[in-house]
Image 1: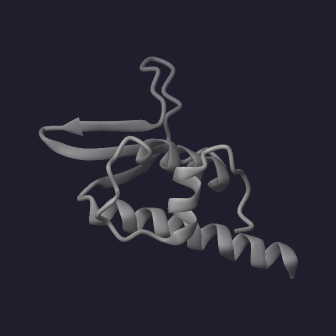
Image 2: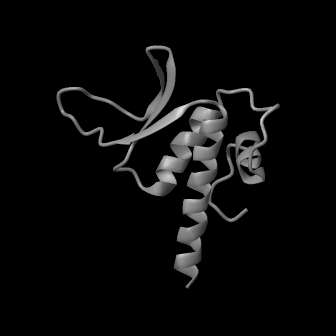
Length: 100
């Protein structure tokens, strides 16, 4: 049961981050980035003027969340409503885990 609750919380947090991306008009693309001919990693970019975050879907959900949090640290989010756990993690990047 505890594992199910943790998984549910983790998925909920990923949805919170997707919601934040929507508020910032950023598309998130979850893709397999394992092409050996074109080394690629998760990150933020602009394609034809459109803001895009590419996340390697092979990463665990926890790592996908960490990737997104690291990217959102680049943005000024003072005037954007975001879930309290996101703001706490962005203001205290050394925090880890998903208990708060």
